Length: 64
Image (cartoon, rainbow, N blue to C red; front, top):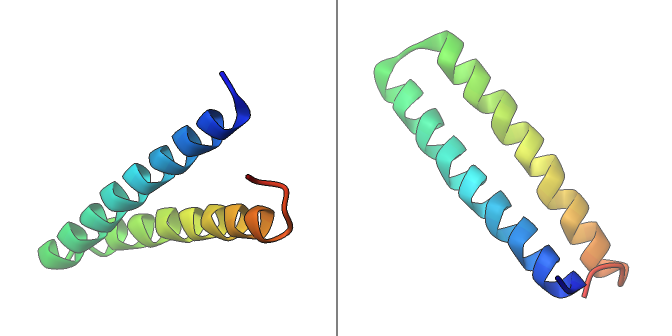
C-alpha cells in the first residue's frame, strides 16, 4: 500500500470517529447525562489533538 493511500485511510477513519463522537456528545447532552457528556468531551478533545497533529504534519510537508 502506498503512503498516500495509507494517509487517506487514516484521515477517513479519523473523520468517522469524529462524526461518531459528535453524535454521542449530542445524544448525551439531549439525555442530560453528565457522566456521558464528560466522556464524550474527553473523546472529542483527543480527536482534536489528532486533527491538530495531522494538520501540523501536512503544513510542515511531512504528509503529502
